Length: 248
View (cartoon, rainbow, N blue to C red):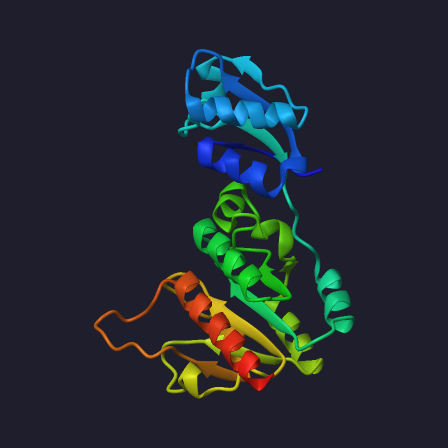
């Protein structure tokens, strides 16, 4: 069981909203009087979890010195799935495949935001790299607002090999790259698709780029050279939704 501690009013509220059954224990600052904290305690009691009253020093230690706002809970974190799980999912998938591939994305806030958009746009799974990338963490879960529970996350050791296998299954591999001339708005997103987005500030790695069937970019009309990766991912995924809805 992958247990982790999350802390703070908003993070605990998110856990209560999206995965209450995954909460195992709770600790609160016995000296703190706060209406929001009192409501969380009431919600935890409704789940049959009685928070342990403790001192601030223990909560500080649990939260590793971060601002816990008087509450810490222990939750069972969703785990990453394997490459074997990915292959099973692809081979049994109904409908037109849509996967999001994150190439060495290390920022948990961006990863969480991508998961949230992936859930909203019907992505069948998110593929991440095992090395030099963030996995599912408490921060990712907080930003994802429940999507870490609903969107399968597949962790692979060799991304180039995985992309090559996806292509063998008839899935087009499309990479987002600012240096290309091909606009996303002139590209067909209705095909079986694995959309690949590179890391913050670095973009796609060379070997990843070489596995892409096509590279696309978003038009940039101002002075800024690129978008935040989670924003760009959102635009591209919703372009997929738009085109597929029109295609019927």
